Picture 1: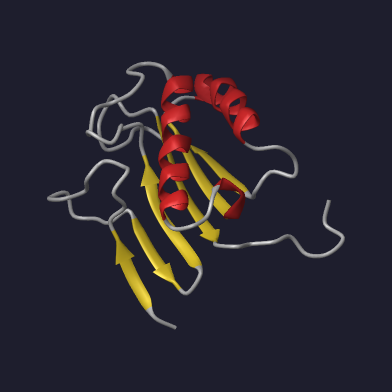
Picture 2: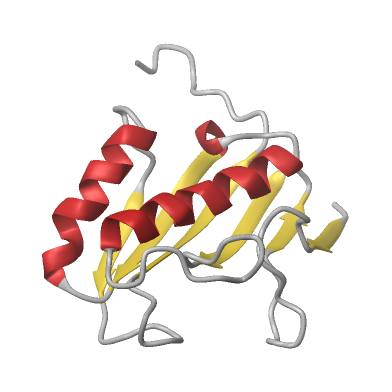
Length: 137
């Protein structure tokens, strides 16, 4: 199965920072942790976990759409929040983006992210053209 590294065009550049946004193995997409940077590299929602979560999901969506998929193809996420007080803001946005059954998600509260203004980071695994098994609600 061929593997490739992809730098999507519609999210911030990772040039010079030592990582790539996406690795693909067949139809499986591994997306590096997304932070609340817009395509120009500007932070969206300084001090606002809800705004940052919206931007993170927008980045995930942009990456998957560019690859021919969408948020519905996500099969696993890991979410990092820097404070327990951000949980409700995260849930409000998540509930607006996804409906039940939600994709599996590991949620961690951590002491900090790569920059002190980053409050939310989400990494994801997706399988393009993923369809739930027969009988799944």
